[in-house]
Length: 533
Image (cartoon, rainbow, N blue to C red; front, side, top):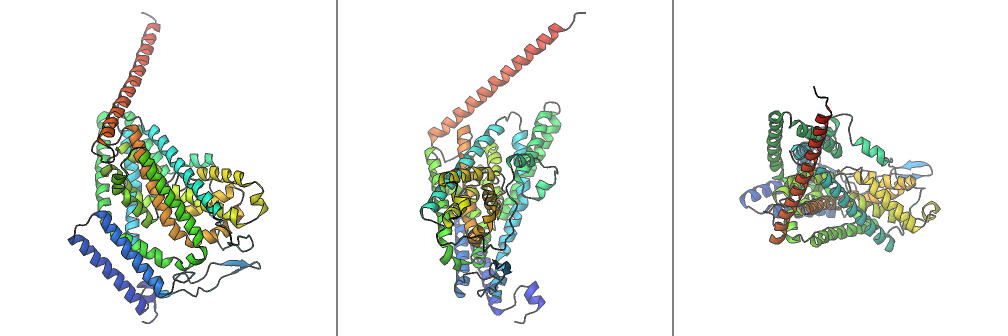
C-alpha cells in the first residue's frame, strides 16, 4: 500500500500488515459478539474469554516482532541527558503497522471507557443526593469516617509489605540510579499540603467537578444539595418530595444507560488487554522485571489481605468473590477506578445486596482516597527502589527506620488527594519523593518504574477497586446494612444484622426524644419568662 494522508493519517492503515491485523481483530470481535448473543454465558465468563483472546492477540503481535526492548509503537527511545545535552535515539523496534493496529484495537476500549466516564459524575451526584436527602438518614458521616479509616488501613498495609519485600530482595541493586542521567520527564504537580487538599474539596465553580475527575468535590456538592432538600422537607414537604422523585427517576435512567455499556464490556476488555500488550515494551521485562515482580507480589499479598479481612469478619468469601470478581477484572482492564465506579456500585447494591447509604458513600470515596495499589504498593516500590538503588548520603543519613516511617506517613497523606484515573501513580511518586525532600530523584526513579507503568497500573487499579468493594462490605456489615436477601452472610449473621439495625433505630429515637424534651423545656421557660398582661 502506498503511504499517503488518506491511508496513513485518516484510515491509519498504510501497509498490508496493518490491514491484515486490523481485519483479523475486528472479525474476531464481531464473531465474539454474535457468539455471546447466541450462547447465554455468565457475564464473568464472557469477560474472561475476552481477556484471554485479547492477551493472546497482543502476545502474537509482540512475538512476530521478537518482543523489542523499547516497544513497538514509540519511534524514539526515552531521552537521556548526556554531557548537558538531551539525546533522543531512534527505537530499532518501532513498527508503524503495529502502531496503526493499536489505534484500531483501542476502538472498543475507548468507546467503553468514555461511556463509563460519561456516567461517573451523574452516578456519584445522584447517589449521594438520594442518600443525604432521605428523611431520617443520619448515619452518612459515621459511614464516611469508617470507610476512610479502613481505606487508609489498607493503604498502610500495602506500603509496609511492599517496602520490606523490596528492601529484602534489594530491588534497586544494579539499577544504577543517578542524578547525572535523568530521563526527559517534567516533574508533575506535587501533592499539596493537607489544609490545601481539604479546602479544595469545596470547589469555587459548581460546573468544574462535572467536567473533570474531582469525585470528592462532586460528593461535597451533592451532599450540600441533599442536606438542603432534607432541611426544607419540614417546611415544604411536597416540593422537596417532587425533587426526590425526580432524582429517583434520573437514577433509573442512568442505570439503564450503564447496562447498555456493560453489554460491550467483554469486547472492551479484549480491546484493553490487546492494546496494553501491543503498546508496552514487553521486552524490557528481561532487564527491569524485578521491579514489576515486586510490585505484583505486593498487589497479590494485598488481595490475600483483603480476602482475610472478609474471612475474619465472617463473610462468605466464595460468594463475595463470585459477585465481585468482575469489579477486579474491570479495574484491571480499564486502569481507572473512576471508570469502574458505576459498575462497582451496581454490583454491590444489586448482587452483594448492600444498603444504598453505604454503597453511595464509601464507593465514590474509595476512588480518590486511600488507593491501596496506586498509593500503598506504588509508594512501597519507589521508596525501596530508591533506598536500595543508591548510596546517596542525603537518603541514607536519616537511617532506614526513620526513612520508612516518614515514607509511610507521607504516603497516607498523599493518598488523600489523588484521583482514580490512569497516571495518578505518577503524581503519587512525585508527591512522596518531594515530601521526603528527594524530589530531584523523580526522573531516575520514574525512568525505571514508568517504563512498565502501563502493565503495573492494571494490577494497581484492580487492587484499588477491590479494596473499595471490601471496605464497603465491612462497613455495611458493621452498620447492620447488609440486606436479608444477601448470600454473603450466614442466616445467623443476617438475623444479627436486623438486631443491629433495630438497636440503631432505638438509639436514634432516644436521642431525638431527648432533643424534643430539651426543646419543650426551653419553650416552657420562655413562656414563663414572658411578662403577664
